[in-house]
Length: 413
Image (cartoon, rainbow, N blue to C red; front, side, top):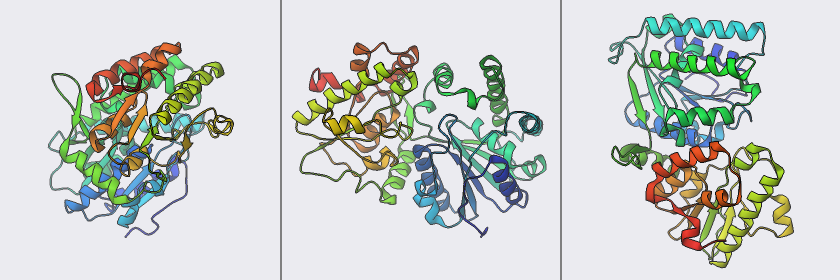
């Protein structure tokens, strides 16, 4: 064992010092990073699969903060991994050192390690015969390079059979790089910039991504995505073996059963996103609330018990006034509960409603729930941003006919 299992939030440098020693001493068999509740589910599913495959060595999970909203996870979001008993849990409070000399030193050290890792790439076969070090990160293998540069010196990296594992990021796993770049521009605030100035930050970020990909391409890689894209249509389908691991991990955790507080009516679960908040226009925010009020009233008339689960990064108290005034016909459930864990406790006849989130696809394909999008109602009544339209086009291709338009089933609310 490695001693303490759960740590308090600490800056990345502190966490790197702890884990760097374990890696250098070859006392760590695997490492994973997560930022969202969906990532946490992916880590749970992966750790469970590793143990089933005979991996008995200790591991570690690093919980990273969001650029805008900070740390959104704690160890409780990884019930199976915590129950394992052999995995350390490390929440990171701050990723980048404060601007100035300390940040320049951090960036220079990272660049040096990236160059060294690129020069010593072992190739797709890896370094068989050396102790394996599996590194899982959301979305794509290159993201694992960040963990390697922060936690592992070059000597330790060359002394291990490093393997990169990609867990499911959500929609970002399956869309084009152009869509990801657009989303990043809208989601990355100045305080998350690597250097001052959007142009300089964007250039440095793109160079960093290319460097990550170049390094990752020289190591063995494995994908752990819950879905696969049909090569002919571009539509998502289940990646059956991995999807079953996700499903089992969600259900084995036993969470979500009390979140819905069922009545004798079927449940309609609304999952809003942050489009209104991101635009920062209060009038537009109220327009979105008006839409939710009309949709919830329509669902209530159709015989549903309507619940709304706020986005984990939603503004606290955003819906309180509308609920208190009776404007909306839904009740809130915990924002901190992963939507996918709630899906596991839903029944045939229950439905899920949202905009263009991958959670709708998860509800439909992984749990067999009917799912509906409100995006076109929103577009009709709201001058939505180009980013919204870009993401919606990508979502339409990925979802195909599996996600219906709300108005096609229930009429105009």
